[in-house]
Length: 441
Image (cartoon, rainbow, N blue to C red; front, side, top):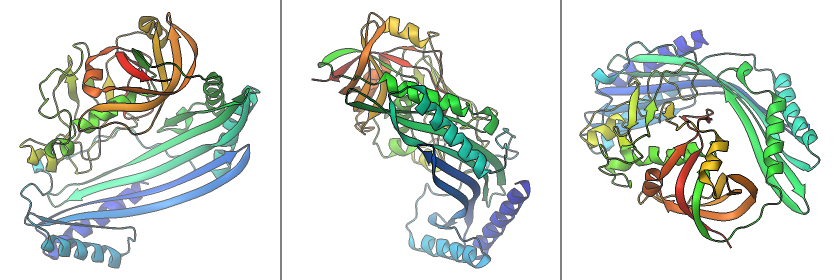
């Protein structure tokens, strides 16, 4: 893969030189190559087997402050030349934008650190199928109430990513990602429920066992059997740790530069303001070794750095690209392409302790629908989970709606659990919110 990385860097270099020769005053290009397999089984039979070998190049050229972009999956010399020519043509026909252009040289990465993201393993279809079938078998055998399966899927991807621009940057890295998931259906007294489990890692040998994934899927599904509705009420809500990253995902959208300069965020002009309780913090750590959201640079070649996004409940940083930073009169902080390993502070309790602290309320384990407005902060989503009384789970609940406003919800966070969800870009425990409106029967 290292040789492939060198080849990609050579192509990016050629494309940038070509752009300048065609009349561009500046240019940037990114290119990726990915090899992977995806296999799935259903009821222990092979359902799909896919092999991917994808690549693509995207280029943006600037003629003064006029921008043109083009992309191609065909990496032949003729196709690359055509992409560059089209990008230059487009730039000549677009309006000037004083905020356009590649990132400032002072912000660009020079020597990217090795973050140990690449752990190649042979893309063995047979072994992958064995993993999927083993997960499904474990789920189906775990409990007689597991009546059907929506299947198990194993994915493996090996990739290389390169970014270059005419400021002299040409950097890249290799990465790997493996995952296994299982979805099953349970039935009891005419009630049918579905749930799932999954595992993901940069290393294939660091995945949870197939048997564990299957058993976890079966347990989650069986626990939901016998779900009932509850009456409309207002109570504390505990978001299970698997759902908590989504709660802060809305915060990511609201403090992203694009939402802010368009004035389409409920958190306009909130930098330096208290948005969360004083004990609450959000730390960004882009250079965690083998981290699922680790990256030495962003999609514009800007170096990534440790940031304290929120300290003592106060918002310190917006999430900026070079364009949105210029629109806001600020400096990019490496967020073209998203966030890099957010660590949410916790208050030390286990999930069992959080249930005790909640007393009576709703433990939410599934959310449905898209009823969240980043413009106003209004939050309304279908939910399922468990009714809790005296700190103990009483029965599963379905077909309710939880509602509030994100600004209020963030301020009313009472606690964050110590048992963390680590399978994504936001690492957090379960989140207990003081009270929310529950719409039921």
